[in-house]
Length: 386
Image 1 (cartoon, rainbow, N blue to C red):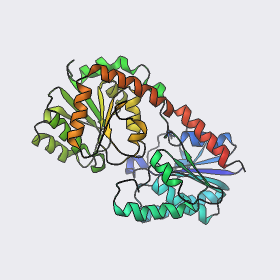
Image 2 (image 1 turned 45 degrees about the vertical axis):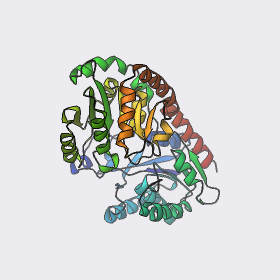
Image 3 (image 1 turned 120 degrees about the vertical axis):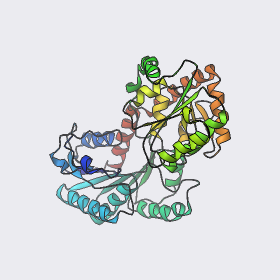
Image 4 (image 1 turned 180 degrees about the vertical axis):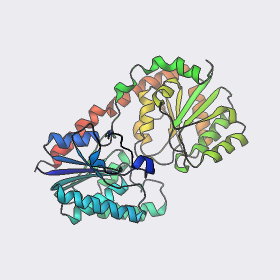
């Protein structure tokens, strides 16, 4: 039986996480691909960043291996190990198909595929680094690297309109194609009935009936641009606005200091890492998302699945999900005045919030996991037919 490998990268785990013996549970990024490969009769090898993963239980019949793929392109030692591990799996598993994801996974997967002459190499771009407005190095070095690696790729899968158009200009391996899918998929059934938890969660957060809850999710890093969001809250000059930020990261102290200096410390709530995101979304009135760079943001998809109007930056990915004035408002990522005005429009108009809620609940149906599973299965059937 021919072998198939799925690899991607993730944040480098702590020692405790790396050595954990918890069972493996493939997520939305990998599950549709693993299932499609199994349906086609492949022996499936699944790359994870865990110690001795072949000894771990998994809820899918796959062979797990330590892919050692982390998010840093410049982690040369780790990347050499990742390359060596993948080459070993290719040899031992008679691998004929590699599906690699994300920058490091994509680099390691395609280099190994080229070295070992793997028959089919598929690459999913979760967001090219040479997006519009990116730094010069991204628009030159990273773009050239993607163009070169495309020569050794049979299929490139993209998730937003900008990346799809960019990939269409690449020269792939003979017969190669570029495809579009609706992200990694979101299970809309997970959000059914969550509205019933709204009152309980708002009470837990000590929110009064007249207070407007805004929510954001994501690491507290410069790319997420929370500074503009906090500045917008201050400029809105509405004490009823209560902004809840879910996530951890190095910018926490700076953001707290900013909120204090702008006089809105009592309106900004840093919740840290949370496991009750769906409940928090059910309690909220608006999703605020000022990020400077995205591929296709899952956090916004979750907000839309919860029926929230979205006030977001006008960037790649966000513009694929939200039409300005329909499911929310789009603003230039550094325009705190524009964000403040948009927040005020949504906060002051209950009827508008209800209309945007209905629009987002309809739009997000295209991104349900069932849709993505079919798209992936169709791509595999096309790419692997011979």
